[in-house]
Image (tube, rainbow over all chains, first blue to last red; front, side, top):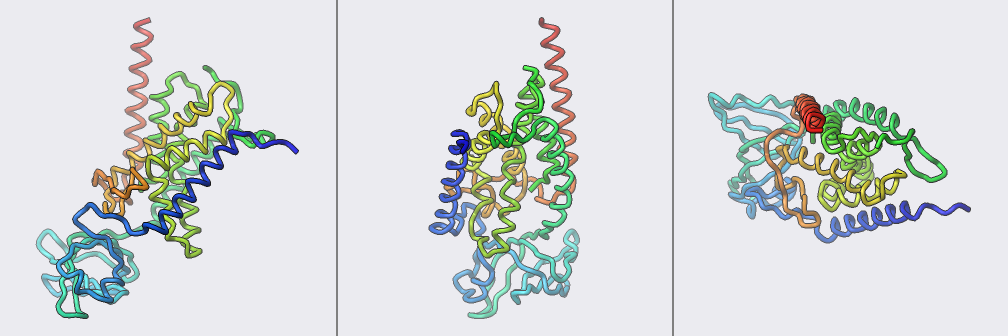
Length: 168
Length: 162
């Protein structure tokens, strides 16, 4: 049986150790330490008990259920039944949001009582990961073409090797 | 994050400037590095589908430590007669740095942004553009054009001096 290249063994070992470190850190220290003025929280946590979050600047994400505009406030109702409020103005038109849009937002929690609260939005962003994937396909294809123009797979060495000698 | 095409064009730009001797395999290492960081994307999607989305693979790979580890691993997967493992890893790492710098341009929510010093969870960002900014490829084209012009000038000057 042929031995696997020591370089490859070392490379795989280092990668496995790194993955183990990542999993360990994800377990023992899962909540990001925030240094920005916005605390990233799960909206469900706020819904359960909004009082500790009163007047707190938060960032989170939610799925839009509906948008109701009662000038000058646009109410973005989320699937989590949270009322995200946007103050409209001359330069702030009603948001172009539709049901099912996933948004990331920043805002301030304002509690009205122990169970009712709103989030006044400072800014929001519609997540559109599908467009990013579609735009990435030509890049992945082009990279594969360039890479395999220069390299080929050497199954004996279990490595990518150049197709021809270098110019240098 | 900026799309793969933009990362690719920036990677090619860096490769053209760093390795001006047209050593294609070495240039390709830099280009590989420019995309390598995002290798976690398909794995992350799979993890999310299988309820293992809590593993912070994206944060881990988009860091200096992640770049070093991935560069070393990728360098070990490539065999070049004239380039040692260490030098291969350095070239790939240069590409990784271009990726990280480009990702820093984004306007992520910094509280869940790029942890360059991972495992220290201190977010970094230049806060300039949205992740889905549609003109990122244009940014890549401009970078590539500037790199080609800069390369041409350097080569011209080198020839003139000699």
